[in-house]
Image (cartoon, rainbow, N blue to C red; front, side, top):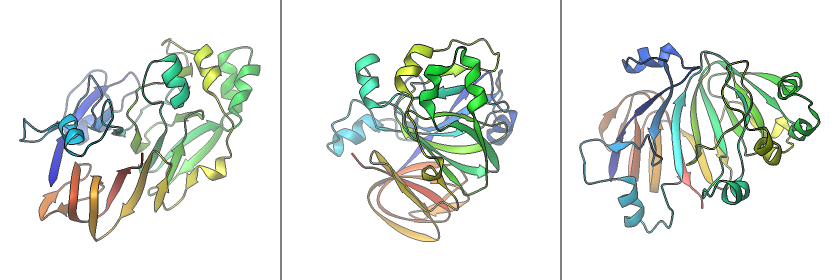
Length: 270
């Protein structure tokens, strides 16, 4: 089985015109996020040329007991630093937001970029002003082919002109701490509940090959690869799936099929 998904486009105040150019889409403000695979309103992605097939039907067919498909996959590129933010874990999401999941994610860099994180996130509780959290940021340069793991609880931001494939739990819960003067709503009380401490060394995956965070797994596939069971595939370059030609960033769900090319393969782990 091969299902191809039609992307949805989300303009953002920090959006990057390079995404508009890449997908030949006009928007104001520019596109910040291309939702490649989503069962989350308002950007549910449809199966190309198959109106009666949906992620919900797919879950029913495979006996998945989820309220929605548990993965959300995007292509993200900001023209400015994202807000300094943190995501809640599953426990906080259920208790505070009445949502099934928090938001653990990872960024695979398809162009060179930069990120900044606060590894000792609990220091937020000692900041007199939210803007002071920027004084604790640790800046990191990322190369093409690197992956950075962003577990729930990590204070983080993504830098200008970075282009990443973002793989995450199917949640849109973001607690902004500081937004660089853009005057959007912040969520300091909730952020203080969510923050945790991490070691940066455990989060960086240079020349990425494989990650399993317990909720989902990701691995880099090269050449010809036969996939067993249900897999989500994001092509990084032109390739083939079951002899169907593909382009960069086209996204598929496949079951027991062979792919060929350079791609990210994502599996649901629980």
